[in-house]
Amino acid sequence: MKQKVKNKILLLDELIEKVKSLQLEGKVVVQSHGTFDLIHPGIIKHLNEAKERGNVLIVTVIKDKDVRKGPERPIFPENFRLENVSSLEQVNYCCLVDDETPFECVKRIKPDYFAKGRKYAERDRSIHSKIFDKERELFFGKCEIHETDGFSFSSSHIINNFLDIYPEETKSFLRAFSKKYSFHDIVRRLDNLRDLKVLLIGDGIIDEYYYCKSMGKSPKSQLIVNKYVTHEVFAGGAFAIANHVAGLCDKVQLVTLLGREDSRETFVSNNLRSNVGVKFFYRDDGPS
Image 1: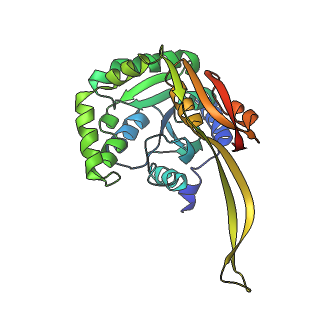
Image 2: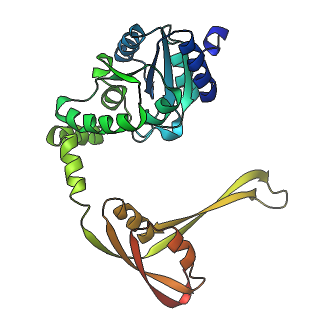
Image 3: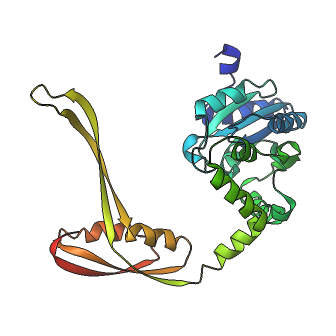
């Protein structure tokens, strides 16, 4: 990586201090925020328009763990995406941030303008506008919103339609589904589930995963020797289903069976959502 490009990449705290010093010098700071998984002409146009609004353009790039755009996303890891952004001439500084939504980092960085792309279809804009306006009141303060034309077609649209992330059958289903239902339709249908009271009867599963490091072949037998590293325990089966349903409905009642020996009742109770009520029955022929 060239030193000029490397110098543009800062930690979040460093970027906050840099913005403060630039504003004290009278510079107008504009911020853009996103995944930047695929640098296409729409992104370049968006960043060009953003840069025209001020003197300094900063870009916050979402970390891999916070990208929620579907399976196998992002395509490129965070360091590659950050370096790509920092290589763009119009970008002065950039950094990795934790939040997929821009509100918290805008609140901390305090730019003069926040540039957001006009990437939503007209049928869905009213929904997004209400969300954005509500969050702006809480987080944006004196920061002004500058809406650009550049994101009128998004990276996700290009990736989902022209790159083979999904099988053809899946892509065909998603295309038909998106034509039949709008974002507003889906939100309304999900909201209608909120008042349902759901009874779930089923067997829970306690999944235990043991992670090991391979030590090579045993000198005394034809076996691979592994060294224990750590393990994780998850509430699966009906426990996991109850938690999923509880994310959609206000009240879920779970009826399930535990082993009287080593019932793991405390573990199960601690790993159910607060709006899941549970009635345990017990069997005497083994553990949970």
